[in-house]
Image (cartoon, rainbow, N blue to C red):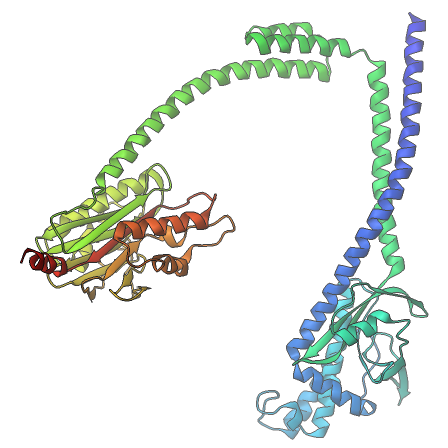
Length: 605
């Protein structure tokens, strides 16, 4: 018995040693691989960071534009006259206050940049302004350097074929005057094109180089990026940014060592866990548990839960796992019972929703042509709900033998509440319209009725038009609804845009504007809900009014049904596989007037 136990320990040690050696080899290879990949990745990240800061400073300079160029040109001529203190941190407030004082003395009552530009300033004021703005730009470059943890950020421009003027330069050359230290401006430095290929490439091409320059000189070992600056189409210089190569390497090694440490810790944990597994006899317990679970998967007998609890007497994770399996079996049993009940309930709700869908569809006129004996017009409408029931509706009916009412409306919200509100709104609008009155008067009464007891604070946008079929003259009221599209007989569809009234049921006692219009034989009106213009593609683009008009104008000779079918096909092609989020309602109306009647009379004759 003891020999058996020693043999097990010996196997565990051997297995641990093998696993440990494998782990060490794996760690070394992982460190080497990680170093190469991290070095490349961080080099790319460094390149992007340098490019970001040079682009940022480039944008600031371009934004200032001509003023920056004037300042640069002025300093090129008058740099010897300027006195810029060399101390840090850079504080340009002294130069600014001096400029303000001199400006107010030399140009009383004037505002710099508004009443007087740089070119018009007094020479002494120009000098003060140049000192202030130059120190300001030094501060901008210094803050950019600190913000991005860079080594140097500076601005240069060429003075000759192979020389650069260091205009804004962090490596300051100084001179003493009256016991104070000042910056030497306009340092002209020879820059060998062979040693600085990226610099001269950026200047010559006007494009940042694809590869960073690398320098190792008295100023340090750095990567350098350049951003050419152009103002009004003319090159003015280069924004340059350096980052220490040593810093990059330190960061890479820091990342590598952290990952290596994580790998080592993981391997140690694996060794310990493996040794523990080898020493302990847990497999038989797991096999017993697996047997019981397999039995349940085949028999679905809830009593197996008690059997699982009985076979495991330990007090560890396996015991916990056994208890969880037993609990899970009990929960699955309860879940299956609940699932049957919920499924039955869902089937009942689905059946009721299907019935509600059918009832709502039956409330909307669906027989076309709706008035076959009336030749003065053609009419077609459709409503496709986003859910089982919708909040959009359309309607059309005669208020008397010569006046036809057209309605397109959209209730706020979705689902059953919106559908119920839709039924009430549709009924009230038609009932009130049949009593007589203009669209605005009808909506006033409907609005007041809907506001009563509207605790859900629903509202409905409505386009209501009443057309005199004898004359083609009509009156419309638009309560927050979409603009109708109108096509004259020989023209194209265009939106009829006029000021809307608020939606119905938003506030009691409001009045609704009315819009008079006149239709001539051959004219067509298309009205729709916002589900048309706000249909959304998978790329999150809206169908919009421009696509609406373009679709309507693809074939202007079609009857109303074909017009709406063509428009719906355009929406479906645009949306693709994206889900429909809103109800889509459309109504098309073509006015023929007495044209058809006149033709029939001529044919009979």
